[in-house]
Each structure stands twice: as structure tokens, then as C-alpha cells.
Image 1: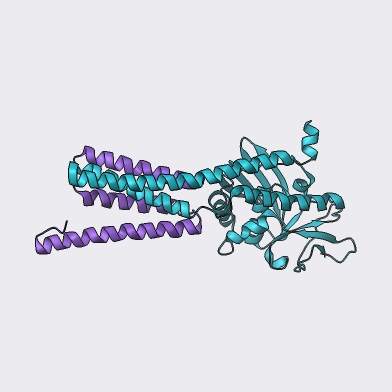
Image 2 (image 1 turned 90 degrees about the vertical axis):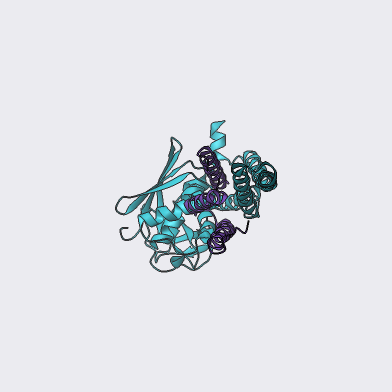
Length: 88
Length: 274
């Protein structure tokens, strides 16, 4: 449990500080926020990769979902460049 | 009063400790679920309101981060152990009490020799010789998987082959731990810190033929009993079993001492040097 608590707390602090930092710099691109969140999640999850097998499997699924979201952002950007219109 | 505490296991204390651990486990499980649901609902709500009404990207991002965190909490809640920690502790206490009764009834005083699975019938176990006579037995041939075994040629070379906390814990490894001090440290860190959450950290020092294992922040109670004199504390037992299995050699706990929140265990590797 202590490992899980450390993991959740680390992630919460990292995501909160990122949001505050990017908001303070006037960042208005949502996809940029998402990309930074994704990178942080992947790094912190890797640092806590010694959690038990079932937890690691569940966290891998979350990582895949987040990567799918990133894939959607990439596709949306490509479509915007090619078609000139945003899907969102 | 202290002498009585040393000689007899404090059963009432053990059960109150178990209850405390059980409540902690249940509370943690509920906490992750409540946190997860709360963060997901609040995160989605905040994102939608911020995107469509307030039109503030930073708040949408904050909602998004809350949703991610909530999803991860829900995943962790689903992967919490099915068996409450309190039940696991009661089962361990029961098993150890039975072994303690057996040892006390037979009047055994020898230190146990931890055998790897290759020399103990496919499962790592501890051999408690009936009488060591100041010598360390060499166990080269695999022993049969029985309670009372004969390990040498002399008539008095008899002993008890018992399962220890380490025998069960070793099943958590997917593969055999690497045959080096670093490998043992890595395996013990995974087992004690991550898998069973019984310690804060583990360091292993190689002393040419013996290993010193330093466990910081041990979270398993120590007891002064004959069982502990023979087998060592539960953490020492797990450390000895893991080392024995990694090196594929018999291992004996020479000494263990608790000082400044660190448990130091000196292990003697029997046979060739590490």
C-alpha cells in the first residue's frame, strides 16, 4: 500500500505542478497539456514499475489508453494540416 | 514481566495487531475507490464546464489530469490483494505457532540451515538438525520431502525439514533470482519492498563467503522465542531463503540484530564462496 500511496502522490504532485506551471506561462493548447501529462505518467509509472504484476498490468492498460489519446491528437493535427479544418 | 514476554508469544498482542492491519487494508481499498470515483466524476465535470461554459483551457487541463489520476486510483483499487492482510497475518501466526510447538516439544536448539529447492525436494525449506555438535553439516544430496529427514551417514544426522515464511514468499518470483550479491539485493528489494511491503529498503554486502543483508524500515514484529532462535525472524527467514535459492547453496543465519530502525542479518553461505 505504501508503494501505491507514493505512486499516487508523486503523480498528483507532478500533474498539479505541470498544470500550474503551464497555466502561469499562458499556455492555451490543450494537446500540449495532454502530451506533457502523458510523458509524466509514463515516466512515473516506469519509476514505480516494481509494483506487483496485476497492478503493472492495469497501469499498462491505462498507459495504452493515454497513448491512444495521443494518437488521436496526432491524427487530428495531421487532418488539420491536410484539410485545413480542425475536427474539434 | 519482560522475561515472561520473552519466553511466551504474546497472542493477544498478535491478534490486536492483525485487527489493526485488517482495518488498514480495508480502509486503503475504500480510500482508492472513493478517491478514484471522486476524481473521475469531478475531473469530467470540471473539463466539460470549463470547455463549454468558462472556456478556460487551464481548467480543462486540470480536469483532464484529475480524470487520469482517478482512473489510475481505480485501477490500483482493483489490484489490491484479495486476501486481507489481517487474515494473511493470522494464517502466518498459526503456521509459525505450530512449528514453534514442534520445535519446543523436541527441544531443538540448533540453527536452521536454509536449503534451496534443488536440495529440498523441489521447494526451498529449512533443515533444523537435531544435534549439530558444533559442526556444520554438508548437505550435497537432495533431501526427501519429509518432516523428519536423515541428512548424513552418522546415526545422529537427523533433522526436521520445515517450511518457513520464505518458502511461501519465494513463489512470488517469476524466475530464479540471479546468482550474485546484486541479484540477491534486487530480488529482496522486489519481494520485501514492492511485493509484500514489509520493509523500506534492502542492501546486500558481500563479505567473501558470507553476506550481510541490511533491511531498513522493517515492518514485521520481532519476537524472542525458540522458533526465532532456530529459524530467525520472518524477514531473516525470507532473506535466507531468497539467498539460498539465488546461490543454489545452503545458507545459515549467523546473527541478526536490530539497531536504529535497521535489521542487519549475517548469512553464512555453506559450501563454496559466493
